[in-house]
Length: 82
Image (cartoon, rainbow, N blue to C red):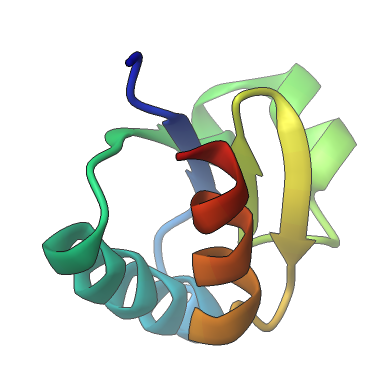
């Protein structure tokens, strides 16, 4: 079974992003997934798309959550994908 791909859109100096990263790393202990971190500041297109929403978490291309990232919502989404 292919492991889900989790894309985490983030940027530096973003306290919500730091919290979200902690949540993702916690979930990494329980779930098997491929994590891709993208700093939106490196891309005008991503900054335009996600600038006001970050952090944003996508699983297999589906936007699962943005802003306040919580363990319950992400773990439910990962459970569905596994």
